[in-house]
Length: 484
Image (cartoon, rainbow, N blue to C red; front, top):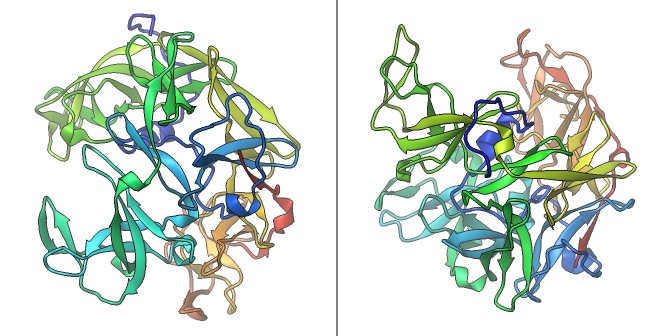
């Protein structure tokens, strides 16, 4: 950054959700996929072509995978490993070393690794089957635990299902009985650890400065590279563009949030919460107030004691760890950039640029139904399409005896749902109808059965609606997968 800390308020459009999402794990991921459920295989359906200027182009073993519309709008999704026959994305597995780990349909959605023996020697993947339709698909060959907070990551090959209700887990190196409120939602599979050395490696290399930032490239052993992000040239923090498309700023990716804790016993001096790895941090570099737009601050050292409440009822906070908050920082103190939006007939994509460095195009967005970020998946017609993101947690209610008309309290004019037990995974989208206060049904072992006389939790503040009509899949933009 080139400016000293100032007192002007920050004016950027970074959302509160992004503040929470930034740096959810200590080890970063290089790709920015549109969704994990696009199940078209590059080896089967993609057409190779020449790589444009900012397109990822790594070792010959890997091919960059894009999702494209018929009118020329496309975004980078991930990579295809030709040796292992799987989609992958790069994850920092240790300081400076990255590997392209399995991604997409090849990876099951798991709640963790548990064991079936009291010595914790036989690992099993706890696969979240009812919620994630991918978990029941035959393509799910792997499970992964990402590196975080100094702990190494692991990749497992999935084997056969394990029929047992006995589970153990390792906590601080000690094996003991495992119990979780989500165990009933999961299925166990044999899991065999795979050495990370099997996956393509790359090193992170800062490029030449441009307009106050260093482009960050992943470079493989043969010298080929792809741009994955930016780093502030003065303060050395990784950053991403936020704000207006024409006047964005490269703000820190690793942010604490200023929300509800204080540094003094009078609850007059705000403190910040680290969003990741608080227990292992000695200090926090930056924090932001979760406002619209956010307000950025310098942060500081870990507090030995922090407080919560207000001036009249301030008490020690013992539920976590807080950090000092320093001066407010104006948005202008961060390096400038801009975002180029390409608009087609139905979709848009955006490309983040700072100086002469541009990331691969990202954020595929539909212009239909009020606008939404594309969830790349197959529609009910089996074709790959830009669909609204499906609900991950639903009531599981239906308004009819055949369980064809979903009932849910989700806001909005439509409801997107994964289709269970269909491979490749599909998403169906339903239009909202009238409020539903009558009987509801549910699916149990594939059979539709009466559940109750009204939806549990229905109220004026949280009303349930029937979604009686499926929106034809053809109303959503078709997509193709292209590898280069």
